[in-house]
Image (cartoon, rainbow, N blue to C red; front, side, top):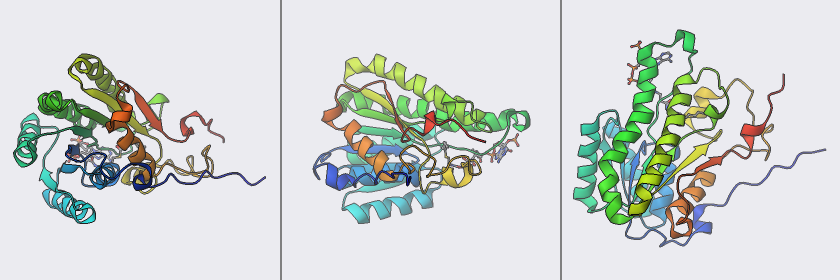
Length: 269
Ligand code: HXC
């Protein structure tokens, strides 16, 4: 029997009103490419201005120009290493100087490579923990006062790979599990100040650097996934828009897995 492939999700423009985020400002780490650049595009298509940071200034500024051209909204690209608390604070200060407020923070800056624990140096492990987990901590610390003022929302980009023992991913698995724990504490401590904190945990996502580098040699295919396709940027963008909108005002301290059920599939030999 031919298997059913569930169609792709609609573009967010078909799902949400164009003025959903008018007057809001998003601060996005890792916003120069991939998932977070696409999330930024969808936020801007619905009225937000954005401040994106990445390690490479030229790349961040080119991405910001592209996002502004596509949406007519303002986007600033800024260079920052999220591992350095002072660098993050300086970026947040620049965002406030430009826009006067921050309503949405997406923590997405991440590093990754494939290596077994037996061959991974402590510095290699630390590099990814520092970018993913410590970088998220630094971003929260630098933005929390602004989100208290705006009653804003955090979205942290995690993964599904730490739910099982994913080979060659000990550094990322530990970092992403830590981010989810961090988000839960943030949700509980800061809910009283009107801040919500949630995680989006993508499974395999089409067209990302992560999938090009990290798909495990055919063990994960679109056809073998329960819905017959991998996640797209549209799937993540729709969830992002929902989570930062008032429609999600009760959603706090949760991890939303965007994988079509992929994580439940038993590997076959
Ligand atoms: C083993 C490696 C390595 C590799 C780097 N290291 N690459 N070890 N295998 N392929 C080691 C280095 O030897 C060094 O340890 C330490 O890591 C730090 O490396 P540096 O290059 O000096 O550090 P830095 O310039 O800060 O770069 C860190 C980095 C970064 C993490 C490697 O370059 C990076 O993020 N690159 C990839 C970006 C990327 O793929 N982004 C997509 C993420 S996707 P020693 O001991 O020699 O000093 C994602 C999704 C997850 O995260 C879910 C997937 C399904």
